[in-house]
Structure formats: structure tokens, C-alpha cells
Image (cartoon, rainbow, N blue to C red; front, side, top):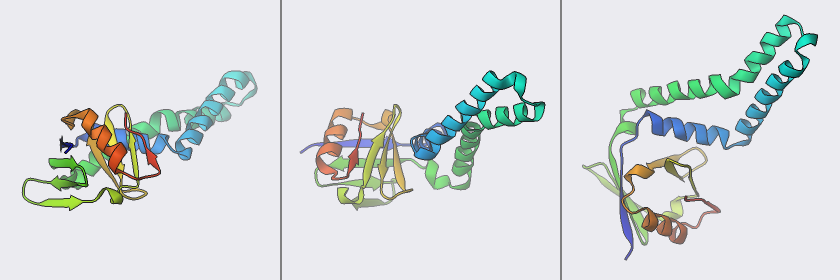
Length: 165
């Protein structure tokens, strides 16, 4: 029987990476970056024909999604950990054939893979989506056996979208 354990202790960087992945992996993020690039490109190409007001407005628009938004996401992630201490609590996930469990050291809850509607990942984390905006963030550094974890996700989760790197 295949199984693996994952110990998670989320930090600001993990939440920030999730927020960045969630935002910039969506159409909103794509169009935000596109608007930023177009605004900065316009300033570069049409600089001599723009008034100083337009130059400032276009530079601010250009920096919003590429500089300001990521900084805001960092502070939001930091604030989330401060406001909700449960997010920073160490959890142990136990993935096995037929289901998975989550334990905080005191209590344990068993779950079925059918609750997972989407599995996504990036360089640092795996995201198990249980709803449109409800996700379990699993830092890859805490996965004991990455290959077994990947095999279990591909075999057990019957979601429309599964991407585990």
C-alpha cells in the first residue's frame, strides 16, 4: 500500500507564493501584466508626445501589477498569518490509497480524495483545491516521498485538472 506523510508549517513565503500563483495564474493576472506592459511600452514609444500627467499615470499603471501588487500580496500574506494563528500551525498530512488524513497533533480528520476538485503546483508548493477559493497549501519541502505523493495524486484524485511537478 502506497503512502506518504507531509509535515507542513506555513510561513509568509508559502502564503505569498500561493497568492501570487492564484492571482497571476488567472485571467486577471494575465490582463494585469498585459496592461502594465502596454502602459510602460506606450511611455517608452510615445514619451515625446505625452504630457507629464500622462507619463506619470502610465508609469503608475505600468508599475501597479508588476511592482505594487506583489508588494501588497506580501503584506496581505503576513497579515493573514498574524490574524489567523491556525494558518501557521504545524499540520501533518498522511496520504494513502483510499484517502488522506490531517492531524494537528491533538485531533485528526480523515478525508476522501473526492473532496479535491483541483491539484495544482508550482516550484515550491502543491495546492489541493477543495473549492474555488479553498485550498490546502502543501510546501514541497515537507513531502517525505515526492514520487509516491505524485503517484497518489494522479491515481486517487479524480479532478478535471491535476498538475503535480
